Image: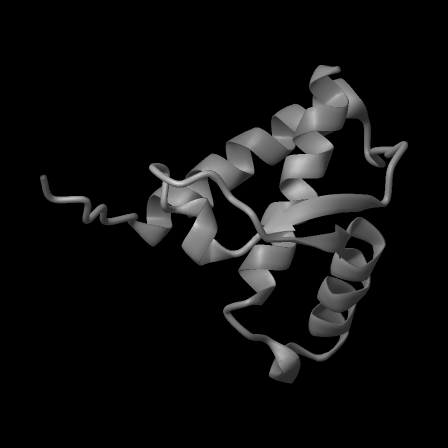
Length: 99
């Protein structure tokens, strides 16, 4: 079975626009979160669906927000890992709104 999946960047761009407009409409311009910390699983363990994860680290929403703020202030600091910080923030915002 081929597990390769191709993700068009344009699909991400369009989906982000549509979903962020929805988030603003249902949650307002600022999303308040009750928790700052969350469990994080390494990419290797997260994608091996046949083995239950055993190693966890702690992530922090406010740290992701600070990191992205620095990238916004100075685009020279941009890194692909910024997408991981963004994903963590989007997950937290989305889960907060559907509760």
